[in-house]
Length: 70
Image 1 (cartoon, rainbow, N blue to C red):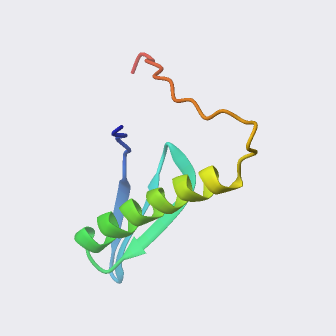
Image 2: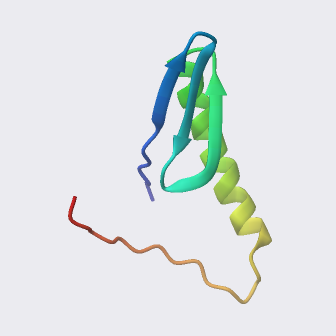
């Protein structure tokens, strides 16, 4: 399964910072845009790995798609 996420990026004098709106707990920084994207990808993977590891064995993880008007 493939998921798509948005990466909101800002640049400043010392590098880049960003966050994933769909996963608000993820904040990342990097020296370049490429480094920021790499770190964001890693952070998303860690997020999902931790979620799977911490859930109850009796819980069920489902994914649904919801469409909202822009």
